[in-house]
Image (cartoon, rainbow, N blue to C red; front, side, top):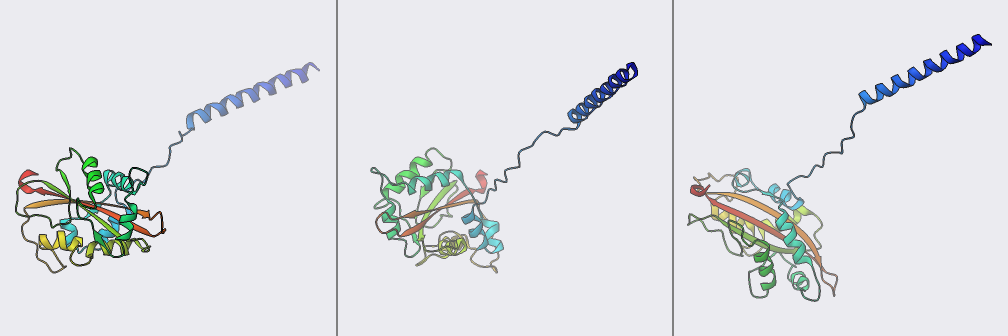
Length: 227
């Protein structure tokens, strides 16, 4: 009986030591849980699609990435409440690619642009005109397009913005002015360096349920002497 008691005590001791050893192993080998890396790319769908439309020499001059201020600007444009209703006008003019002119019927959008980019350097100007290449300033041009909302393919939307109609595409206002219009162009020494950003949002007409894409493209132009 005494031997059985001693054996039981010895067995209990062995089990206790084993448990402590196991705990020690766990504490020494436990790897902290690391959250998955957030692959937050800097290229939005529309900026990547615009880049796909470029010849290599055009991409060297100006390619596009995403921009949080542009995205916030489009969110604001897409709002529709008692004090601010512009979506219906935007949708009605989007049957073909349309480059919005600043002021006039687009005064509300122009005001939003001015508020969103107030104090930025270079100053951002909403425009439907060509970039300028006869100055030594840093400038930023904002092109706001509306495109038919029935387009489902982002590449199709990018082509509409890049090529436009009646000379209102990015090819006309930016690349042609810079002298890089096709893959065979021999680039001349440039007086400017460029950065580009693009975002888009889909909006719906409250009355007809028609839709349109609003695409905002920001082109920064930096005089080489100021970079």
